[in-house]
Amino acid sequence: MIDVLAVSWASFTAVNRAVYRELAQRGWSVELVIPARTRFGDAPQPATPDDPPLHLLEPLRGGNARIGSFAGLLRLLEARRPRLVLLDNDPNSRMAAEVGAWARLRGAKLVCQSCENMTRRLGPSVQRAGLRGAVGAGLVWGLGALARPNVGHVFVISDDGEAVLREQRFRRVTKIPLGFDPALFRPDPELRAATRERLGLTEVTVAYFGRVVESKGVHLLVEALAGLKDRPFHLLLDEFARYRDPYAERLTRLLAERGLEDRVVRFDASHTEMPAYMNAADVVALPSISTATWKEQYGRVAPEAMACGCAVVAANSGALPELVGDGGVIVPEGDVPALRRALADLMADPKRRRALGALATARAHAELDLTRQADVMERVFRDLLAA
Image (cartoon, rainbow, N blue to C red; front, top):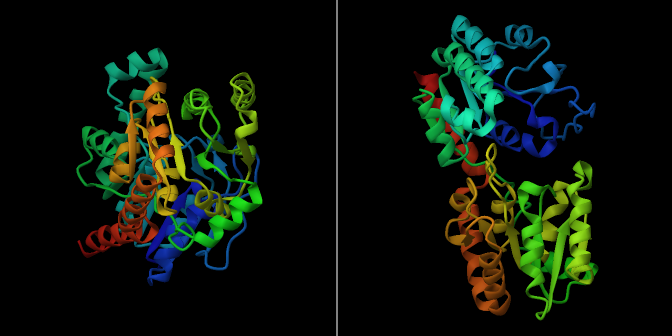
């Protein structure tokens, strides 16, 4: 028998296994189920020396998190007999229903983690997505009815997520950060100086990190900076080449049209290399745009950049304002003039940039890092197992 068997689609990447490594280091016996391949056919990243034991199972239903599962999961549960199953998946899902039934039969506890942050009530779902929204809402409520009696607790990652899960009649809900590694993401003056020299960054540097897709609003950042060409600055831009989207070509054309090509410094990096680029930046912009069917669920870049001492300018999309707190500036989403003013003010005021960066670092390391995430998990796990 082991303490925790975690089942996680996201943990095919090593960075998403960090909290399970932290739990293992704290004395929990943890094992981890991950997909043997992604829906693109990619193999998972290799295990690190500190990873808990990994079980690679074939995904069923093409990796769809709502109706998908893993081949042989119930057999593995029978073989390992965990006291607690942590399902990194919404509780309104096939896996939660199946694993919850197994947990009730064997006297184990089931905890789920949800990224949901939009209501699944029928009326709003139909307004957002028509017939598809209605079908999705019916699926959510139907699967939830099967799983709910056997779900011991749900972790959520935003205030909106907590409201949504309580609306869906889950009563034991706790907000938790998606923690970053504080040993990696921290202010490092020497790394900053070396990276800026290597990249040729000599002016105030505004950066965008993350996926280059339309919903992240990078074109709004370009438009905002186009109105500041009379000021010296660099734009540090994440290529995010592994998940390259056609939007990236549109962005390249827009940079040329706005005369900003000579201000851009592009890079592509692994997650463990990101602290160098975040330390090199002065201001990090996160101009995400909500749509009818999506709003920012978390925004992992925000706490990572804050932890490195960056001043953050973020749109009020989804969870971004609650992550940034007093460690940055919040602007109305889609408002290019407001974004331009916020950037201009920070470009012109190095003292304010440093003060915001210090607040950001303190907030991130006190409330949003890996140790905080593991603390919350441990408290819930102990309460459930004691009960």
